[in-house]
Length: 231
Image 1 (cartoon, rainbow, N blue to C red):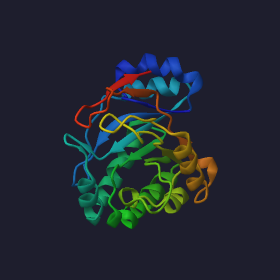
Image 2 (cartoon, rainbow, N blue to C red; image 1 turned 120 degrees about the horizontal axis):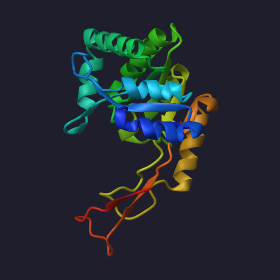
Image 3 (cartoon, rainbow, N blue to C red; image 1 turned 135 degrees about the horizontal axis):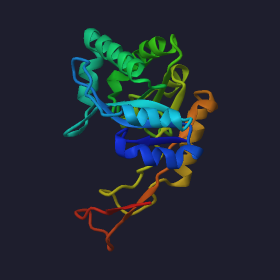
């Protein structure tokens, strides 16, 4: 099981509670800047708790900004060779010095024109991490074909050949701003799994399962946002 936590000291009890069901904890989150520098996170105690519970902590690196996930930030950083190398160096230093088992890359909304650049970045980062036995994992959107324009930036085949694990975010087909419907329709989830397994080693696929739902007001009004419901 692959579990996302915030990586702060308050998560130590959660880590211990779920350790018997969990293999990896992905600590959320580190942000990066356009020059390749990284934010900080008070995660040392949580990392220690993960290892003490016989689970492996991973550092999540994300393009999340105050305005949301930023494809523009990803593009600006990865298309600048100096910034891209700086980001790789900083990720390697973070993972090595803080005692992580590896890294989880969560760059959302990657642009179609950055598809090859993104794969190249992952390959370069993977070479650096794998050379010293560290893991490279990634979170990706749920592709069911190559004909979905907003997911064109993710080359499942290339990514699958590079990473150790690919966490598929198989949820939010319906969300708080959408019409009512299942968060993870079984037919779409099945199509996503089949699409991934045609392009990569199935042992690398980790299926993301949503532990939440939404409560829509009926009759449906597109101006009304649904209320999230936790597990």
